[in-house]
Image 1 (cartoon, rainbow, N blue to C red):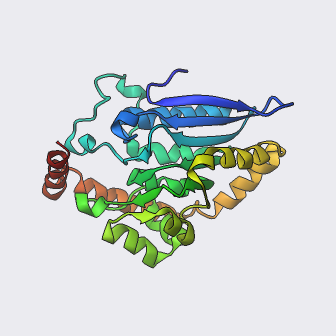
Image 2: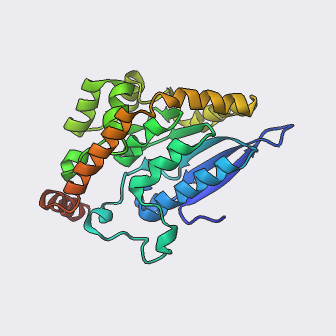
Length: 263
């Protein structure tokens, strides 16, 4: 299947039919901001990869110098840019894309070579491994836009990096650098920017060469601890608060101010 906003490349393992599949966010002109179309493409691409037995590892990378600028702010104003271009029934809303990451049985690796903002950060706990270059940075400007956390990150981030660090990341709404992200535990490891993809491919290849059943079952057992009623309750509470935030006077004013500065 061809995608508008995702580039798909299979990296074959010598002497095997197994592949490492690279899915690249390819909306670089919009800094890989998650429109409805990009979210839908990523969801479908991950599901398709997971259904193919020879795909042993999935890498999510990005074209350009920004991993993702987060959700496309036009969505806040009810102006989703892809709605008129694609059949509505085939689209996955950006606020559901985490579900395809959660459901994926195949190991998922995020490769962050530049700025990660908003959704570009809150999706990371849903990956099994996150590798970044020293040029990467991570910011969650939700409160600046009159919004709150998403994707169950009020549960996953405190468990991953600690409550106080989550508070600084969310409440201060300022970027943290790659070294800080690694020290906090948001990033698994850092690599030099020029060799980032090569080093991640080495790790992905190591995983891809192992018996797939053992890899997938081990991943499921590790992930099982997060599939709790507590996580679900946190996600539901976030969605309730977000529903009251989207389109609010504060949210619209903040989004309009952003557009005016960008123009």
